[in-house]
Amino acid sequence: MKILVTGGAGFIGGNYALTMVKKHPEDEYVVLDALTYAGNLETLKDVAGDPNFRFVKGDIRDRELIDRLFAEEQFDVVINFAAETHVDRSVEDPGIFVETNIIGVQNLMDACRKYNVRRFHQVSTDEVYGDLPLDRPDLLFREDTPIHASSPYSASKAGADLLVLAYHRTFGLPVTISRCSNNYGPYHFPEKLIPLMISRALADESLPVYGNGANVRDWLYVTDHCSAIDLIIRKGRVGEVYNIGGHNEKSNLEVVKTILKALDKPESLIHFVKDRPGHDLRYAMDPTKIETELGWKPEYTFDTGIQKTIEWYLNNREWWENIISGDYQNYYERMYRDRQ
Ligand code: NAD
Ligand code: DAU
Image (cartoon, rainbow, N blue to C red; front, side, top):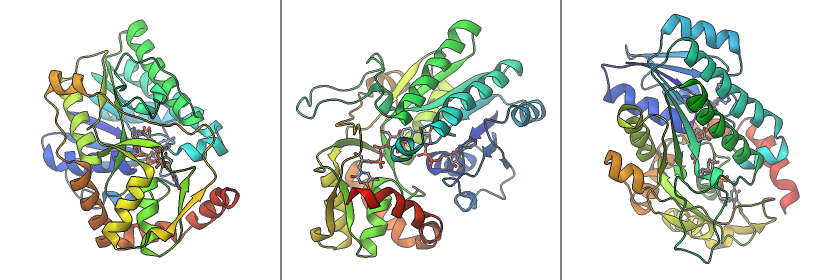
């Protein structure tokens, strides 16, 4: 199979390419990525020389480039990881989220239709379901939970999901959608909670916890997300949505304290700051469908995954120190100065 992986220089798409290029030498992988602030070619260096891998720099919003690439490559499968992904940035500037996360998806699907791609897979998120109350642990997101997005980011992802399902119903485009809970692991950009806290704790800097830290996320080690997507593109039913998650609910404060303990740093580094506007309270996935239909199972618990992640950040300082020494400093200053 020839597989297009868009957004493959980012966190999850990068882990997907690194794993699958080696796991499936019989398949060809083309990574298309615009290399925005979140994309990093360093992430892909272990597969850069492999015969079944090719990198193309390009923007999914660019219809001409997409058309040329699809004509040239005749893809069998397209997996769309490319997106603007940080909720706080979507609060600051929603426009680019609509452009990339909705218009970009439309461009890809138009090309899939024109070149008879056998499967378009959209990588979506649990955030399209909105949030759950903190005091109802019995409630979980299922595939038939109504869409109810809270932030410009999650609204743009929800818009894309609706468009993907509409292309399936109206044009018969063979699509699948996966909605995953919060990922963590190697190559995670240090604007997101876990790598931000690890990198700041290592430098003995204050750790900005939004609100009272009671918000809950359902964490999944990134390669478990990748194995689920690999199963869906091979065995998933066309037109279906699959939830992905591993029942690892933790409050933000629990996550931050776990990191501090593992790094032997004091809890006095924790600094409660102004809350995120519209901050979702709790996410929790019900992955029964993918487990029973496709036999997917996560390999990592939160305890094993967070240890592996912390070790990776300790052993790969160059990767993240390069990021935080650049424009990231301006980002941190701009994003956090009004939260104090
Ligand atoms: P990321 O921000 O780390 O990476 C996004 C990648 O997309 C970057 O390499 C960036 O350069 C690229 N990109 C952005 N705009 C582009 C454009 N217009 N054209 C081409 N490339 C572009 O994101 P991530 O955390 O790896 O998320 C990947 C996907 O998974 C996203 O669709 C996200 O919504 C979804 N998702 C993420 C999580 C999570 O916890 N991180 C959970 C569920 C779903
Ligand atoms: O649930 C899946 C989603 O997870 C993905 O779709 C998004 O692309 C991804 O960014 C992530 O969104 P979150 O908003 O949950 O992730 P983030 O790492 O930004 O924040 C996790 C929690 O930690 C959230 O409750 C906000 C809080 N937080 C975050 C930062 C960056 C803090 O308390 N302090 C911080 O500095």
